[in-house]
Image (cartoon, rainbow, N blue to C red; front, side):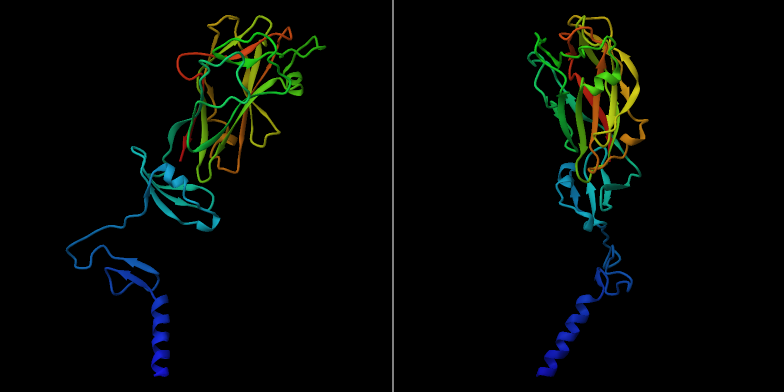
Amino acid sequence: MKFFVLISCLLFTYSSVAQVGINTTNPSPAAVLEVNSSSNGTDFGGFMPPRVTPTERDAIPVTTADEGMLVYVINPPNSQLQIWDGSAWQTLFPQNIEFSAVLAAWEVLGVPAFGPSPFDAATTSPSVTIGGLTRGGGLTTSGGGSNDSWGADGWFVVGFPTQTQALSVTNNRFVTFTITPNFGVNVSLTTIEPYNIRRSGTGPTTGIWQYSINGTDFFDIGTPIIWGPVTTAPGNDQSAIDLSGIAALQNLTSTTTVTLRIVNWGATGAGGTWYINNINGNDLIVKGNLR
């Protein structure tokens, strides 16, 4: 009897590590699992991987140990077959498909004088985490700010007859926000959509967009912008900012937080103001490609 039990245990152990076949009794010796489309040669079927929405995919608690996990992301018209490579979801089909999305959008309509700091985005993509618009430590909100706009005064650095970009950076005369891809998402920044800037007569005349991928080292985006002569409510329309050609802002994963900021200079008085102004719809929009 003991001998029979021993033989049975050995046979069970052998069968538990052997190849497994579905619709076949002769699976390939090279495969742990082989699935045949048909068991009778007449009725056929296919392999159905787990189907999830983008939000459900992002909720999967994947780690580096889960490399090779496969899902089908239902997101018409951009549904994708994706595989986890240990750090991000990569698209297998269609090849290299990307879709454009609003990553963050701020609406200043209804914002009281100067607005809060940080000021949260009204719209954010579920694929990213956004840090709100934040005033630099050198800025103030001591004057009479305008409603339906977001900004600051205190742009003028007292004691310096010549106001420069470097002086403003040293004295924290800038505004910032951050974008961090969520775990498992690949993000490329593409555009800051057209926006509108309002300034007072003694407010900063000039500014520049900058980016950083480590929070310390900042690089200019394009050339300095002359904000315009209008100092009343209509403000000054600004062109879109193209980010797609900046390699450091492409194919970002959760290991990188991008800081974008606007540095301003050229103010002629401590009470000079500068605002992101209200326009029709969202007033500051950052777009990107997701995959």
